[in-house]
Length: 531
Image (tube, rainbow, N blue to C red; front, side):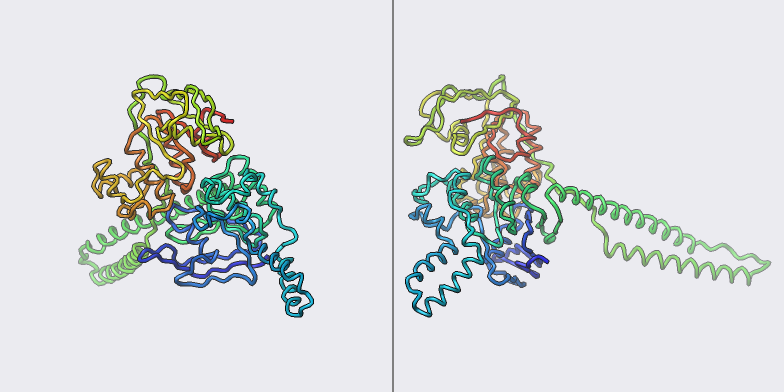
């Protein structure tokens, strides 16, 4: 029987008056790999922070097995020392601290107390896999951060810092990995390596990710978090999709069966009510016998009527709701067409940051109707090219031409372009002259929900929530050229699937950077390879 790592019973968590998690129960055993999915803002990150011990539940019980070791990768690395080198950051782990203490005690083993402490720590070090840890370089090279060992954490880009944090998570042998969007800053080769690495570790894990192929290859179970609670499925993400569809069909049949029964009961009640209220006149020849038969019929009719009414009341007391597949159907990008066959032209575009040349004499044309994927390893200039095209970076040399009819919509990777101090109401009121009720209507029409966010400033939202607001911004702006930098990052899977459908129906031109293979296969029709 597998070792029980964590047992949660009726967990509840509130932030102020906002109830985020309510009555969740969950058990995690050694070797189980859960994909954790759910809509943006449903509490996925809150749940794994509770499991990691970074938050305390307001109600319920959370029990961890003795000596359980947990490694947690947050979606964004906020708590770090900017003056620490990458090497120091990587070595600042529980196992490394034990090893440092063992080294310090090695010269004092003639002291009985030191010897006893050394023996206990030695046993703990061995039990936690201290002698079989992954060498640092075996993690650094695949994640392409080997040259950063002596750099300060504060000097790294956000993506580089997250790859360093991922490396640290994988270095120690933990019983449980909690990974919040681990593929966000990885290129395709890194994602494949991570998937292989996780299978080698055989560690229990809970993984939040928008990357469906990664989830299929990395997880053997799935948890779906919603307002109704936590639902568990055995198998991969594809298995979950199949089970969800089967459940939907069963619920639909039960709903239709109940509606049919309700209709039949109402018809019978009407018939019996009419029959009971319309007695026939008694015949003179046999009044007594006729009246006796009539009274028996009346009683029989009343019993049947009462029985049908009772059944109808039971249905009306617990009516089944028609199951609706909660997909986003309204997300679409309508626009005025380009008046020529081309939208953007890059002519010998070059850009460097200090001594490092990122783009060198790049040439390319984006034509009307094209959906082009910009592909390449991390640091090759994909984001830089999009930012130049959007007018947010100035090129060093070369030219970029934008057609006069081109109306550009730009989505940056971490949604940093929104004015963070403004509320949703203030921003959309100022830019689109919308009243709060209009904003709610537009969010509803686009299927983006989150009506409770309209009075909150952007800085108080998760990246996923800000990205949904930025998608609404794009919908309302009606661009005919879309520049999208990792648009699937931080989105829940249902919003992602709706975005894919909207882009496939978009009649304008698209330049996109993405590492989500499922998204690429559906949306991209051509590829620009950057080296």
